[in-house]
Image (cartoon, rainbow, N blue to C red):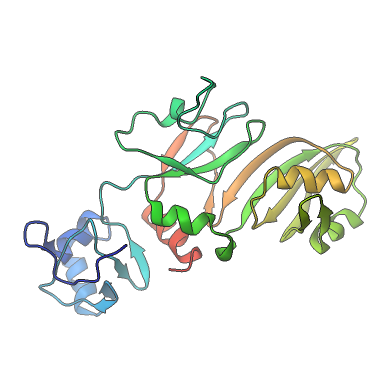
Length: 251
């Protein structure tokens, strides 16, 4: 929980413009200008020149966008390869996420999961607050998938069925959007967006409408996209991506 205190303990307090500059917002002079123009808030209050903050606990926003100032927090996007389990400490000794991001000296966790046969974007962090928000059903964070399916060509009503909702053994499920990307013979490639995360939900929905999945790739989580990350590769999220995730999660 954030400390609702504008003036923290002296031993951890730093000038606000210095903290903003260290977070990559801009030069100290540019950050001073942002503060002067009342575009910066700290713990819900408009900041003023001369304020000091604790960068590990303060909730700082510039133009309403969260700025991450705690240098101990890690935010990664990983392209999980097929065959890798979504675990950072697999008891069975299988290839796991730690084999790709094990060099960090902080305890990380994955945001949601992908089954071993699926691949694509996984967010990895040590920010428990953001993780809880991104995985809580109330925030309805959308996930985008590209799936290769069989039993083509796809009838035109497949998309309408998925958008209207299909009945699964654990209750109804429906897509937020659906798009046919391409087709070759009896195989098709589709994009499906949904905001819930029940186990194997995409595979089960597509199988229910008669088109089992042969390959499944998650290409986006909320505003963060997989991009051109190679399988097994990771990158640090940009400040803009982190701010967009907090905004999507209701901040």
